[in-house]
Image 1: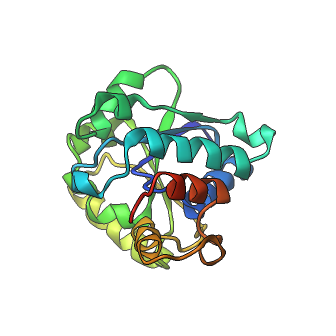
Image 2: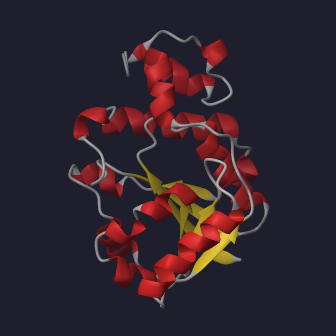
Length: 207
């Protein structure tokens, strides 16, 4: 167990793959608490792809409240530090702002391993923060291990822990596309909460 995990992303929108991931690591005592950190803009994505920061934050807040019971909800803290900066978000900069004496790891999906070497000051991050990896996109454990081995051949200091769990195969890009072509909630309920869907419709997002 690690005291804290940081879980960052665009959450554009937050979906049940994200929520199931959070639930799993908390219920299985992989960590004691989670810092959920929505980014303002990933360096790997175009700004026009994003819903407004304040609306993404609202979707996160309402989705967490509807999905989690009180005992788990109190273990999740939303940090809007990157949203307030209103610029491209770099994990290393956020880590330096929130750095304290509590042992902290970084929670990522296995698909992120492809671009991890491109993160700003990744060697510094590897030195101080272990990575906890959730299997995504039906990636096998063996495939993940091969990717880790390749990274560690360049950065021996890196530490990885594979969490043998695969959440719902929900993709934000696909959700946005389905909303754009007019899918109603009955066709999206497996991947987003009703609260998030209502916020999307109210604000005419992704259309």
